[in-house]
Image (cartoon, rainbow, N blue to C red; front, side):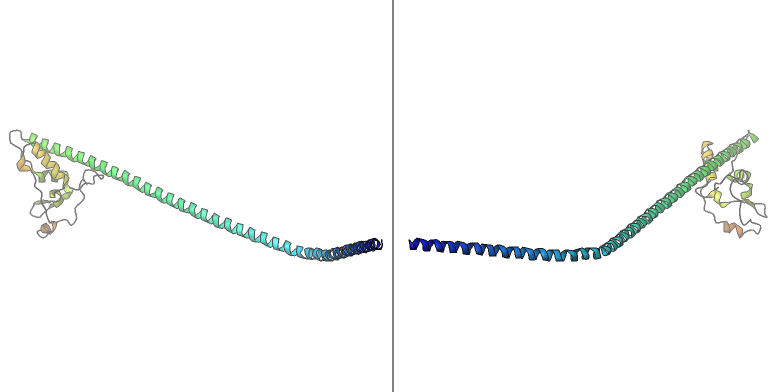
Amino acid sequence: MLYIIDNLIRNHEAATEGYIGRHLRNMEHMKFKARSTAKRVAKFPQTIGHSILAAPNRMFNKQQKDQEREQRDELHSTVCSNIIEDQNDHITRKEEFHSHVCSNIIEDQHGRIAVRESQEQCMREITEHLKLHIFTMTDSDPQSVPRYEYKNWIEALHPDNVNYLRSGRSIIDHRFYIKDSHHRILWNEYMIKLDCRDAIVMEESRDPNLDKSLVDTLVEETNKCCGTMSNSCGLFP
């Protein structure tokens, strides 16, 4: 019986000690939570104060960043505008140069066409004059065989290209005897048609200074070919 009572007392004491221990631990936990809450409450005003104090700096930094971004955007816009203007100027200058070149080409072509037409017209006039000269010589004495002289035709066609010496002899401009002389080529074509090969004029290379040394009345400069026919005739002899 005493043993049972003793066990009950021990169990009660153990239970009491366990309850007291748990109670003490709960009290310590509550104290810890209270201290933590107090610290957080104490720090909260400081956090608010730091936030309030930091607000102007953040606003200033934001404004500064906005200004820097606006400056960068403005600089970028200016650079892009300058590049576009330079490109447009380059394109404009290129178009103007191309237009100028095309205009020059067109003018040159028109000039070439005008020169060619003038040469063709001049050759037609020369050809008609040669036909008339041949007809006149043939018709002057039908009974005799006409003797065609290249020199006589040039004197009649271009008297300004004839130099007369004191002796009465005449000298034709040396250019009428060169290889590419239109007059000589035309004359030879008609002489072949008339079967007057003895009247064909051969190519000659003459030095005009040789004749100057023989006479003192030789003209220094001769007028242009076709000068007596038309101002538009720009052919060499």
